[in-house]
Each structure stands twice: as structure tokens, then as C-alpha cells.
Image 1 (spheres, rainbow, N blue to C red):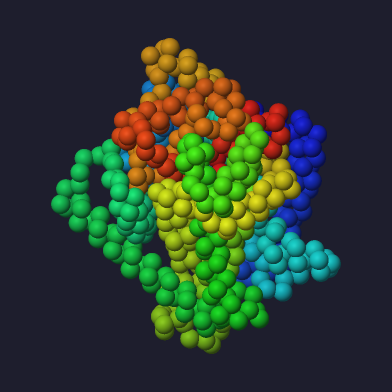
Image 2 (image 1 turned 180 degrees about the vertical axis):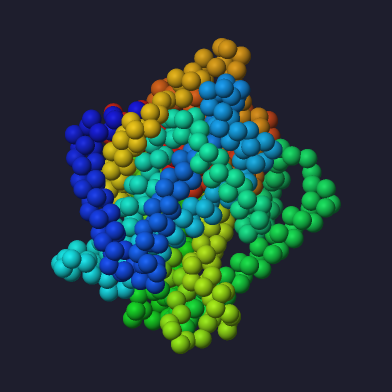
Length: 534
């Protein structure tokens, strides 16, 4: 496994050790804050409720992240190969591999990620002025007020470690009813229509790009079309209502934003953070899109050239490095957005827009902010970047954020993820998928070759893996030699592209936030082994 190779390198072993020390310290602090009723939830309810919510949320996040990696990675594999050995995994892929269900699942899980992170913030996020155990002011400021402890906890425990194991042990990881239940929840969220305004963005972006949205399903009947657009309109109405309530709360200073921050500044921070999350979501799409086109086709913008030169410098190590640093940035921004958008009505004050107490309680859960973040700061930016990757790169902000993400990755703050992954794999008894179904080459020889024909691709679809091969960084090319299933999958994606587009055209590959991208450890020994979905 890649994580064991990571820890065998002295520098990475040191990073894993100090990252693990920071993580343990952070978890102790968070648990102490809850016990002393100094978090958002424990200050208003019994600490037991906060303990239950934070651990249920973080454990569910592990399945949301790991399940996504597994379902996307298994999409091209013939599911009959593991029908008997992994019956629940078979049930899961039977759902996602049908029609456009994989797209629907990715859309629903995007909201699940955001809402779970918001729940972690509500239960463990410190209230303003929180202090613990007479820690020095600098410790309180770094770990509590900035949310650093929460960021380390969420990234290492809830996200990255599960992606390490799920990228190699996909079959074992989702062979549980917990995975099946999580899948059904994601599908139910999409069916509910809460996120259907994203489809309006999808349609608009595809039209601007001059492409049609391809589907693996028959055209909608009039009744199905009416139901679809009804959900799009009511989703749009809900989104507008969320913005109205959030902005009203910001203007009146009725959010969990730190005391002393004026309303106008809180509003600016809200939109800046949303834009930063959007940029980070779109950057991964644009980066993987330009990875598969020739250097001469990457535009004439000075900033686009500077960004690409930095990203693909040398062996191409900065691309996976960006993905790790990006995870830290996104989670950090989400915690701040949760604080800025969560409504907080003091006793004796009027509710927002004079609504009843029941609805006011709903506003205070952070659900409104989660919905805004999912649609406006995540999905929409990904779709835009997928259609216009070169234009997206032609911004100095992209270059600055890339530098920031690379700096964060270099610190080794996520080193604990590999330690936890190794422990989790040992306890769960996970084995590599090749043990059960062989390599892609072995499957092909046995007349059970992988096929991507059922995987939705093209304009308006969430990308499943970066659709590039010949122009990939050398580190990824070496990884494809190490793991033939990756090369086979990418080849299938490219074959589908050639069937649907002229050779001269370059289709963008959309990579969902945390969707099946290659993330390797920072050193060369590890780069041939590590594959993570971020």
C-alpha cells in the first residue's frame, strides 16, 4: 500500500509523526471544548448531543469520501466479477452504473460533504472567546479561534485517510450496508430537487460552450420534463430564499460571526470565501483539463503560462501536491463560511423576516449556508471550469492559490492521514482489489475487460477520472504502469471522446471535488504507489 511506502521515507515519517501529534492534541482540545460547553452546540444543548453529532458526522464523512472513490473507480469494471465475493458492493455499483445514476450520486454526495462539514463545525467549533485549561494566548488563537484544530481533525480523520484506502481497496471498502445506505441518501438528496438549480447552470454552461449534454437514458417524456423543471424552479426559489435570509442575518449581525466584526465586513468575507471555495473547486477541473492538451494549446495569457509552468514543473509532482493542499484550503473556507452563515438569534430579539420559532431553528442549523455553498461555491464553478479551462487559468488569483496550496502540502500537516489509513486497513482487513478481480490486463485476457461505455461523459457531466494519458505528468505515467487499471480506464475515456468529438477539439475533463483524482505522496519513492481521491 502507498501509505506504508510513505512512512518508510524518513522525511515523510517525521511529517507523519508530528502531524499525528498535532492531530491528537487537536482532538483532545475539541473534546475538552465540548465538555466545557464552549462549542456552538454544547453551549445550547447537553455536551452528549455534541459528542454524538461530531463523531457520527466525521464517521459518515469517511464513508461519503471513501464511497465516492470506490464507486467512481469501479465504474468501468464488470460487476459480475465480484457478484459473489462482494454482494453489497455489487448492489451499490448496480445502482450507480445504471443510466445517469453516477452523475446523480455525485451531485447528491457533494451536498452531503458540505452539510457534514457544517455539522462538524456546529458540534465542535469553538464559540467566540473560548478558552481551555489555561493555555497561552498564542495556543488558543492558533488552535481555537482560527479553527486549526477542527481543520486537522476533519481533513485527516474524515477525508484523506479514507481516500488512501478506498482508492486501492474499493471492493472491500463499500461492501457494507453503511456504504449502501450512504449511496441511497445521496440519491435521495438529488431526487428531492434541492440541488436541481445546478442543472440550470449545467444547461447554460453547455450552451455557452456550444455542446450538447449527452445522456445514457432515453429522452424525458413530457411528464418527466415537467417534473424535472418543476424541481429546477423550486430549487432556484429555495436558493434565492437562502440568500435573502443569510444576507439579512449578516446585515443585522445575527450570525455566529465573531463579535466585533461589522456587518459590511462580514458580508464581504462571505462572498470572498465563497469565491475562494469556487476557485479551488474549479482549479482542479481546469488543471486536469489542461494536463491532456499540448503546451501550445494552453493559451497566450501570462498567468496561464506561469500557472502551467509551476503545475507541471519537473516530474509533475506539483499536481498531486496541489490536490492535498487544496483539501486543507477548502475545508478551512467551509468552516469559516459555516460560521458566517449560521443564523444566531439572541433571546428577546425578533426572528429574521418575522418567521416562526420552528423555521428560525432551521435557519440556525447552517443548512442554508450549506445549500448556498454546494450550488454557488462548488458545483457551478466546476461546471464553468470544465467548459472554459484556459480562461479559468488566465487569472493571477489561480496562480496565487496554487502557490498557497503547494505551501500547505509541503508542511506535512496531512501526514497523519497515512498513519490512520494504515491502522484502519489493518483492523478492517482490507485487501487490494487485484486480489479479488485481478489486474485490468488479467480481466481483459479472461474476456471480462473493463468498459467505460456506460460512464456518462461529455459536456454537462461530472468527470469521473482525469481524461488524459499521453500528456500526463511523468509521475502519473509511472503510476499507470504500476497499476494497469488506471491506464485502461483513461484509455476508455479517450476512446469515448474520439467517438463524440473531432480530433482537433479538446474536451474538458470535469473532476468532482474529491472525485477520483490521483494524489501521491510528495517524495518520488511514493509517487508510484499512492493514489487518493481528493
